[in-house]
Length: 302
Image (tube, rainbow, N blue to C red; front, side):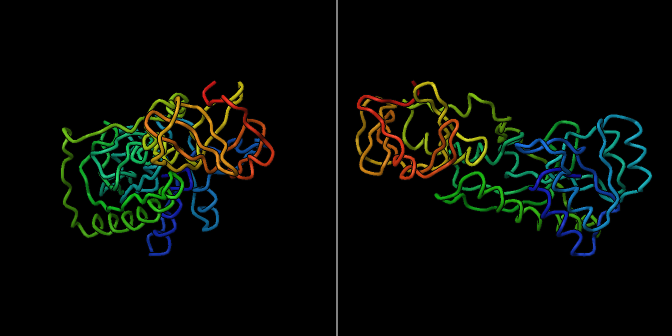
């Protein structure tokens, strides 16, 4: 069970290792992209390539869906980047149902663990497989794997790396369950931290914060949904930055230094490396400044 690209490596590794699912469950086709063309999910596209039966339920709580799953008599249910399943569904498999989560549980329970780990300045993260239970992301842990968060990582790079690491964990977890060798261990709720869904206000840059905090926000939200600020009433998305040690002026004030774009924060300057002004394409700051000049006294957030 899965929908976005994050789940595709897990599906592919199962297929290539003789564990082809009896059925793949994914979200219904819907309009995607700028043209709003009706397209299949990445997981559906992969399943179709391998002629795997598909279910695309509108409602996971519909008793008809539970009966459809039961008809396949699954041994194990593998859930990667999917919706919250009702108990009537995740209790069907003989050997259990497990989820792959993109954090080292119990840290970063919730919808956006990759984003929040970077935004909070973590130096390490990972993936965890755990048995499903009704309370989201709280089930007993089966396996986990760690990876450093590199200084150059943004959410996109880390997402892709965790998808590949997670695929290995999915395969190992299936093998353990198959062999009856799994040793589930409970999560310590005291150590739990939240990773809630990202909202618009989480993306708005507050220039009075430190350069390091803003830099982590930019990394943690790039390439999507992207940290943003405003200038002359237009939204400016920022995709890459670099904190500097130089002293700054008023938070948000802009310095244009040759082909470099520098902005004052609460403690020092930060260099903007890549951005996108509303109505224009994403580009490097050097490319941006060839066609746009800031005036003395200009600032972001205004």
